[in-house]
Length: 76
Image (cartoon, rainbow, N blue to C red; front, side):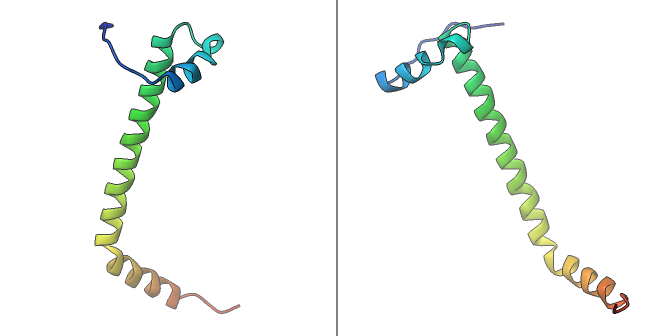
């Protein structure tokens, strides 16, 4: 369901949006596509940050395990 809203944009942004008018049905469609893309990027950044925190919390254990595995490798 679509909800009508009102926003205020600078003329510069509006002109930039209008330069892409042929690629979208309307300004509304352009802004919805842009907002979805930005929200997706925010969610990905949040997930990446969460994953990095998990890796960092376990870094010492993971590094020790990697060193143990490497100790069993045969020199070539």
